Image (cartoon, rainbow, N blue to C red; front, side, top):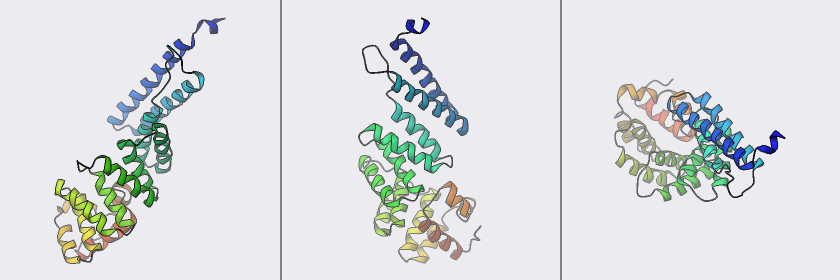
Length: 239
């Protein structure tokens, strides 16, 4: 009897409040750096959203969860930065499908997810699309696109893109390291070492650490190998 007193509209409205409560909690936890609890909060919101969609049909006065794409984007982006690249790719592909049309933020994250999972050709296409959607403003992710092009053997295409990043962020250590990498890939070892040594000593030390290159800035293998040769030739000890 009690169940009959609860209308579908009331139930769906109540459930949706819990969905956004968990989602907002996840956002707060991310801002505080609590990534594991944040992932759990996002997962709860996603589960509730899917339950809402399964239980309710479209109708007047009935609120359905219509933000599953955003929830998957949030969790996928978090997983991408929390050592779970395969799960991140699943989330971001799901977010892209649900979105139904190109979205710059989703495409940027999807490109990076495919990159760190080793799908470089697909990643390159996604980065190209993301850049075409933000062509009037150079963004830091353009550097990642340039390094993917290097991985695929398109040294000149990657270098042309990186030069635009360098014009916008000329003093950023990672930009200088990437610029040195491209100079070396183009065969100018002396210029590569000179550019590499422009990085301040304390910051340059990070780029001698393989773990930093593979797990923090997560460069593709070709870029890592090239930069390590440059840094060795410049006199820095590799770790």
